[in-house]
Length: 296
Image (cartoon, rainbow, N blue to C red):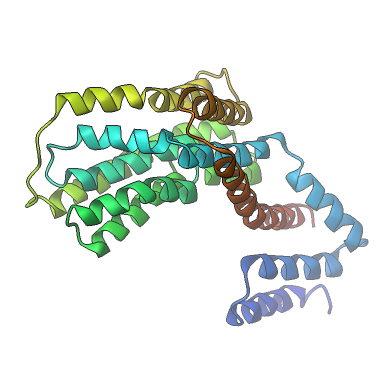
């Protein structure tokens, strides 16, 4: 195929693969191989070099570390303690449990940076609680799925890290830019949860429950302060803050709460590896395409 007709051939290839319902990895990989084969003098060599350079970046270490930290908190008790604390604060509000679900997702997203981990951590606790409290099943699922997406924009968001890598943009600046939209989205979702359940009378604040849940969640509440405070103060880079988050979560779950066993640690590592296995190959291909379009 001539270089002049190659773009049309690539578009046809992508359209055909989409019609066949192939995965994103297959579509990007096929398009990338064909593009290098047509335009590069040594396609095999340049594909390998660009793929290596795409993943040979220190900031990408923050992604597995943030995911692992979130998995550790989920398999241990930090996530449950955090959700209980927020639920105690929102108890008097009509639809307080639904509001607590939204706020819990936002707070946990600030710990893990991942929508998937956030949904797993909060959903495992709040979904049974919402159903038991009489909330419609469709509303419970919708609230969790909608609030789980806050992990896309709440710092330290993994998608923001990926965007910063691909666009060569400051990760810290992206985190700062995400604060306003994240707060607005959380507020709007919480207001909707309140309005949709305003007929559900709120309970009463129970001082004993608030004090107990605050004490039990103290270590969990300190974590976002350490992570985000370190990044915004310039004391930590994104990668360093992820490492601190991972070590902090391990320290709390193993030595303070002592609720993370060997099986839980293995499950956390396994799930982290599974998520990375679906993310990094696509990231590698996307960055290679970006490099190809820049230099060819």
